[in-house]
Amino acid sequence: DPTSAQPTFTADLAGMYVVTLTVNDGFVDSAPSNVTVVALTVQDALTDTLEDALDVVNGLDEESFEKSKRRKKLAKKINVVLDKIEKGKYTQAYDTLVHDILPKTDGCAWGGAPDADDWITDCEAQDALYPLLLDAMLLLELLI
Image (cartoon, rainbow, N blue to C red; front, side, top):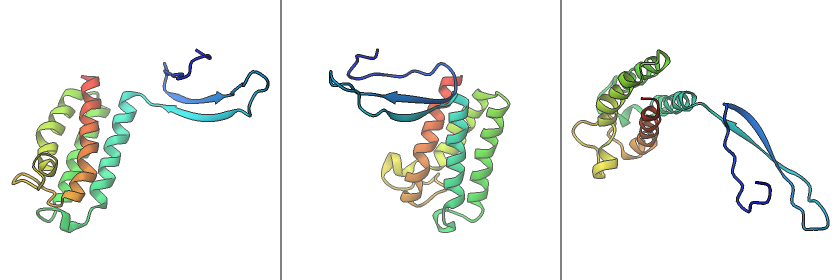
């Protein structure tokens, strides 16, 4: 609706869209202002989110982990979820994320401090990763 004070845009296909706004005060048009909107499929958004989570895990200091090799194992678990998504096994990916990965990263979010199950023992590190994993969980729920 071009007369709306709060216009909306809903993409029906993934892709890049350019939206142009031109304001008219009744006498003259303003210079157009453009914004590019990127619309992703749920699967693409999910993959991007998990790749961001993987970047966070790989960027953490070794001291952020409970034991050595936990970073490598956590990254491998995220890669397993990505592989399941690529194969369309969304329920299996969801189960791995919710029952295997999230419990290893949720102590600070739920209790303010790492809990006994957490592989990441630094709340700042958990705070960087946990929201991405929750976003991935919500996106997976849309695909199941």
